Length: 149
Ligand code: FES
Image 1 (cartoon, protein in one colour):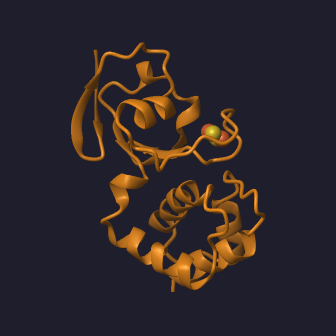
Image 2 (cartoon, rainbow, N blue to C red):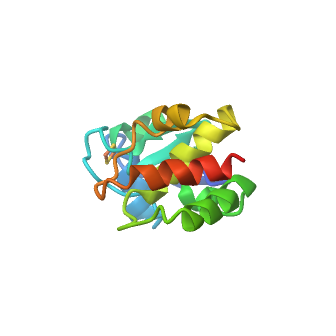
């Protein structure tokens, strides 16, 4: 039995310790906002916060998260940073197919929590772990810049 905090709730699972956090949150807890892209730690689609740090959930075996505080995109929906980013992504036309967006939003929120007024170069660096297969990076950078004003 592994116990941890998921979006503010204490939860338990009997899943084997080798199960990926990505699969557990999607399949056992039905939190499907977190996406699988590469499955190899390269694309950031599976980004979550583990103890407030941005992490790729496809690389994390759940045996390592006992007692940890996990937040998914669903867990930040009611926060001010999310509402601001939601508006700015819409205003900047930053959502194309949408697949990368939950991970991009997590990376954006992580960046703005550390650096509330990043330059465009700092924004590009901040989302460098997240790939957009539509290659809409300029609008995503504009969206984060707008949210940071
Ligand atoms: Fe985890 Fe791509 S699915 S980094």
